[in-house]
Length: 453
Ligand code: OOG
Ligand code: NI
Picture 1 (cartoon, rainbow, N blue to C red):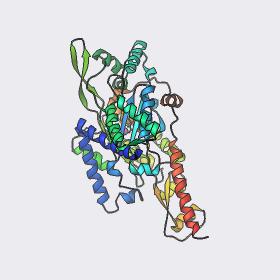
Picture 2: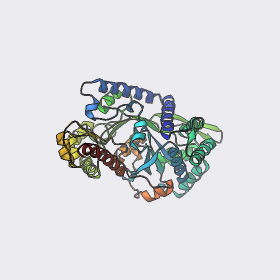
Picture 3: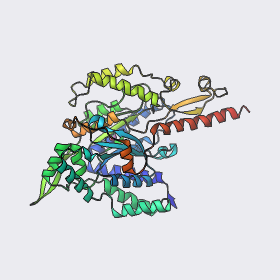
Picture 4: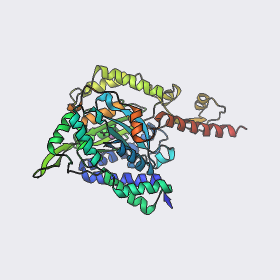
């Protein structure tokens, strides 16, 4: 019997979480904070179910996303095949050149409603844009170094091929698959470049050094989902975790939209470089912890409004890395976002966000959604945003790379080039939400109007 891809994904997510907790103890502390805050929110009167009505809270305590950075097209293509065994497909294209980060990215995640409910684990996956290294000799050295490494175990590749050939894995193979794939994400303190090369790569960009210098694409953070990010952030500060100065994304609202994120800064970790006289001690900062709060997915119209308002805020004030203007930034964010409607019904009626419909107790029939909602024959619950935000992601990258990570010159990235490397197209996130909304409406209308016939 084949194990479902969702089961493999859930097992993998749990295994990764256990590994990261052991590797980065501060992540364990973060998970505990989030679990406590979530319990408090769920226990409070008018709890999170009122905040995001109808949402399934069962998945929340297990919910995680992680991130990796890959070096070559071959690595990305193989990673895509590995994730497919776990029911994770590439969704969305993120152009990080807007923030002068030399990668472009997608998110591998489950796409169907049931698969998401079973386990929503996602991995934000970036591909290095080696062409952005200006120094030709250094670029060639980086390319050679990457070409020499194999980030997958032979067994992981064999099991992926077997899953592809046989349409899945049985229980025993699935268990081995999880263990073997985990190896790709493991941290290796032994660098595969000497310390001089490492320094040169750091000078080109910290992110380039992180991708090129090590044996594999170590998981660089894991992110549990909190129901109250402001409470969790305050708790992080109380517990002495080096929290990022501001929460990325929209401000706190009655009806949460998209995604709000914060992180604790990357750890300074001991690494070793191969040298002529054996290992040489050194340091590297790459791994951190992050938390997120998710709200309703926005339509293209809603997203355009979000992007416009955020751009307006950022044209007036940019959050300083040291937190010195954090209060002023938050005040500006709240002031500007007052223009974004903040009731579910307005978000729905103005076509700004996606919703699941359910049949209510009210007596009304027909096809007119507003009439059915007014009468209570239909009810709304927000479809949760499952994706990422480029400006926020850039802020997360920068907070853990340090501010010197900004560089001015950067050519625009290309979705077509990314898809060519991956070997397939990335799915359109809006299309996925739209289809979920349409399917739920169709099912409800059928039910409501069947009783009329
Ligand atoms: C990925 C940063 C982006 C997010 O949550 O937006 C990200 C990275 O640092 O590799 O994970
Ligand atoms: Ni993240």
